[in-house]
Amino acid sequence: MKQFVFEENVKKEEYQNFIEKTEIVSFMQNSNWANVKTDWKSFRLGLYQNKKLVAVALLLIKKLTNGIAMGYVPRGYVIDFSNKIILQEFTKGIKQLAKKEHCYMIKIDPNFCFHETSIIEFEKHQSVEVPVMFSKNSQEFHQNLLSLHYKHKGFPKSINKTFQPRYHMMIPLVNKNLESYTHDEIKNSYKKRIRSHLGDYHTNRGVFFEHTTNINQLDEFIAVLNATEKRQGIHLRNKEYFKNIMTNYQEKAVLFFGKLDLKKYLDFLSKNNGKEEEIKKVENLIKEGNHILTLSAALVIMPTNKEGIRVSEYLYAGNILLFNKLEVSLGLVYDICKYSNEHHCTYCNLGGVDGNLNDHLTIYKSKFSSIVMEFAGEYDLPIKKYLYYPIEIFLPILKKLYRIKK
Image 1 (tube, rainbow, N blue to C red):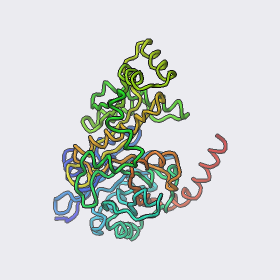
Image 2 (image 1 turned 90 degrees about the vertical axis):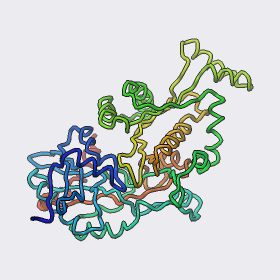
Image 3 (image 1 turned 180 degrees about the vertical axis):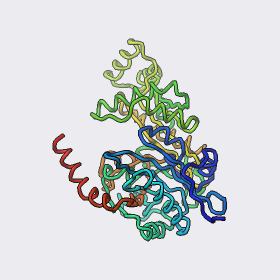
Image 4 (image 1 turned 30 degrees about the vertical axis):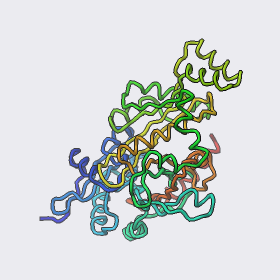
């Protein structure tokens, strides 16, 4: 009997059970992510050792041109990278599949970090203790991949240079001893100016927060997102994409809303010497038939593993710039953190930032005293070397020429 067996399509239930029991895993390695990335072919890979499943990965394959394809494993493999024998056997299996699928290479961006550093350490140049979870044994993981001829793609800082941003900012929901924070402790970990806008400040002014997994409220979320897209001159995703996420992640995909009760806000302004201009604006909105305004919204995916390090993922968010001084978006993040805390999450991941930590995303996300996670980045596994190296040389040049022409 063979000790190791590589399976190209593990049964979905068995795959999901493995994911649920994994210590650290990304929602992008959930088998349902394949149903969201509909323009990629997918495989649920698995490696069995003595008939026991010991590693899995969701492999996505994209056809490029002239019979050439590439494979991508987002935030994977789901494997013990310190076990070189298992990693080697898994690599053999994925290479064989990649050849059959005409892939010239497989790209992975594993779910481990080189550094976990409080943003305060960058800002004030003082040491801050943080939970260390994603960077344990990362150098060993890195060396094991290199020894199996994976090509590390370096240390790019730009948020646009890699499939997934290398730098993320996560709000810790546990202390350095890995004990869960209370809601007040979460709030008190934020910067002082932020704390002053939470709780009673919002309640007294008619700001409140809601969350739902009801797909019928997707239009409300998209309306806020569209306002943000129009303001920033960008395009994120269409309704079908978000519908796919909510359908495939069901109770794990949660919509959060920050809302304003206009009548309550008007009452507050009237009793607290509000500015005439602000009062008029509220009165006009009420006359137009508005009573509740949705000013901030976010889509969050809750963790798919049931134990270990659990991370809620703040995927997409938008804001309508009315009554900015109310800072509704800050309260929304706090509401997401409270919800994540109640569902036993270790972190709330606010998502990617530029590695130079000077972009507008960093400025916003640093308000929550977040931890800067520097992920290892991308590793390429060349399959057809005669194609891989020329493409690596000429593809960046072609992309640059395309941007110039555009």
